[in-house]
Amino acid sequence: MKTPLRLRPLLQRAALRPFFVDDEGLHLLDQRALPGDERWVLYPPTAAGLEGIALAIESLAVRGAPAIGGAAAAALSMMAQASSATDVSAFVVEQRHFVARLRRTRPTAVNLFVALDAVSRVLDAAGGGAVDVVAAAVVAAAEAVIDDDVLACAAMGEAGASLLNDGDVVITICHTGALATCGQGTALGVVKSARAAGKDVAVVALETRPLLQGARLTAWECQQVGIPVTLITDGMASFAMARGIGGRRIARALVGADRVASNGDTANKIGTYQLAVACRHHGVPLHVVAPRSTFDRACPDGAHIPIEERAADEVRTAKGTPLSPSTVPVWNPAFDVTPADLITSWVTESGVVVRDDNGVVG
Ligand code: MRU
Image 1 (cartoon, rainbow, N blue to C red):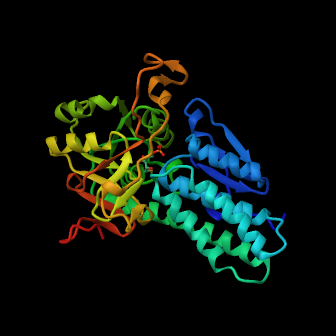
Image 2: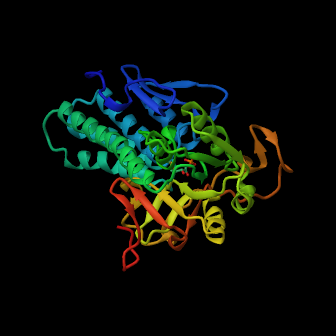
Image 3: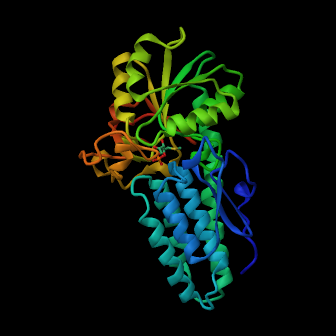
């Protein structure tokens, strides 16, 4: 093996990190086991290890758009470091094979493809010379993906916190915290920044059927970092807006994104669209919090966003327990598309943005 990896932001093992890298390989926190179990799984720098990481992404052991991109970048960096290829062309063939495998894991989160494309550009540019030089460039590209996300999370937090007032209650869906990114999170990161600025902001978390990222991960992460949180089922969102919770009305909705088309249509966890419709009815502003890496300039509108459809048993069962007849037909899209006109603004690392006169989110 070559010199050990140096993925600076994620070198330390910590409860609120989706992964870290050390000399043994890539360690993923298995998010499927949370909140009951904090289980770290090691993927060594071998072909089997890379396949394990691909399966971990597919099965949502690591999930959340920026974390998927970061994990893929880290995996490729690890494989580049460990390569035993003796010439650059063999190295490039081998690495392209790994990129192709990761490309087939999950289709909607564009951050994955941003990370894979960053590494692919290094491979495309590789000429002759030493394998170590190209491997070092792959590592640098992977580090940049991860570093950029850490910085973007901090900047989004600061920008988004300006939208929130002391005493606000924020409704959110899925999980958008540190485990879903390489930094403090997107939508949940905004709440963290607002609270760090001294504002008493509380969260209402939708449980997020069928895989319960809201119940399992948002509720857990809020409790870990001391954010007051109330858990409700997805079907309670409208009534919570109509009545308020504990005497406090819901001030805003903050959600993450897996892909934002250039017209602002936004793919995010299934249920976001329904939440946005409820927000419009109740006059609750809805903001999408997402780094630039989630904006797909090549995608004109939501109809062009590939939507992942997952296994029927995710709906028919919960943790292996049957919820329905085992053969009932199921439709299980993992994401939906919220039309841009239901979105008040997008919070990015560049600030709070709205659509321009041409209907483009800049
Ligand atoms: O299927 P998941 O759990 O990967 O879906 C995650 C989401 O929909 C998040 O809201 C999105 O990735 C933004 S996370 C910062």
